[in-house]
Amino acid sequence: MSIDNKLKTELAVKSYDFDPGATTETVIAWVDMRDFGNFLVSFFRTIGTGAVTLSIKASTVAAGTSPVTVVTHAVASEPNAVGDQIFLECGINDILSAGSGLRYVSAVVSVATGTDEGVVTYVRGNGCKAADLTADVIA
Image (tube, rainbow, N blue to C red; front, side):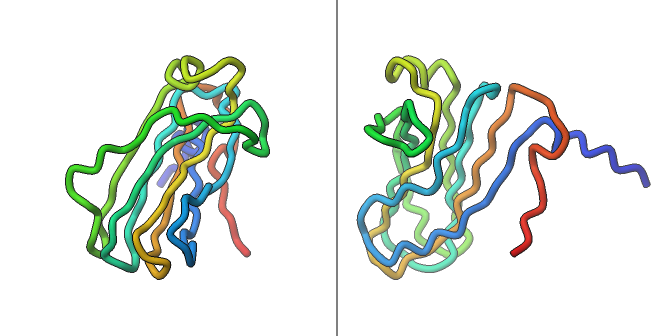
């Protein structure tokens, strides 16, 4: 069996545990969109049944100072059962049209109760190709 790691060189994929302990908006992680054309976020419900909000914000700096909203998920049906998933995507043109000099993006999630949990996954693609854009993460 041949393993050519094609997708690992074309997509940067990273998952984050989402256990906020609060109902306020939570910034997941700021990532650099330089050399990428598209950003996809998924929220996968692991605990809870409450309402979820999901948006993508952008900033001119890696620390996320003064972020602006690029796009917000219009939730038609709430992801209110374990295993439910929602997705939100934007392109570099969406990011650039939201404000001058925007380069860094983050998913921003809020839940109805502080005990709700999930997994947030980022996929950056349509850009550079390099070894190990997606790499193993072992604690």
